Length: 168
Figure 1 (cartoon, one colour):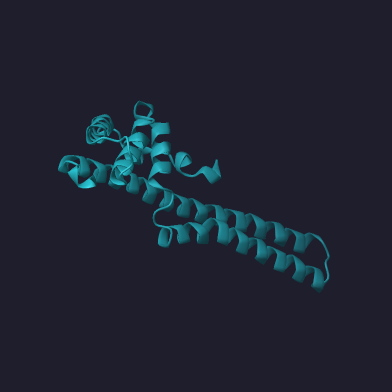
Figure 2 (cartoon, one colour):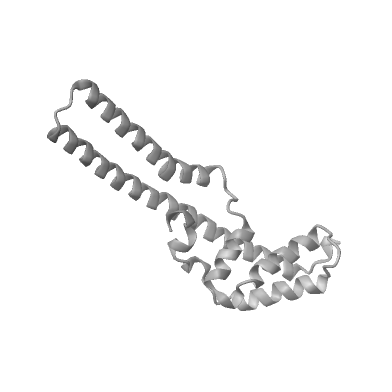
């Protein structure tokens, strides 16, 4: 049943997936580089704070060791959250977020295709999975419609704030 799709519809679907995948890659790279900047600035401010405490307050060696270990622990947590986690996402979790989640974000930016992109992807997937009620004509119409409406849209123009929900 899924093989009856016209070749042009499959091409449109795969082109949409490529465009969405480019958004995913951009999201991950922006997340990594912004994480590096946040880590460096946070660590520098924290180091400045620790050095200020060391110079102003007379603390014995045990107190200094506790402050230094706390500083290192906080830096490790920052490193893990802002650099290692995005790096892991780039290297291991290559297909997260899902195409549907990214299509929702893209639709939020481009209101003229808001739900159409998600609907076209879902209809295509349901048709391929042999779900009842999804005709070949519906799939082709949805894909052709979103293809025409999204040709002029630059998905990569999404601002980084749209791509990084954790930094909002």
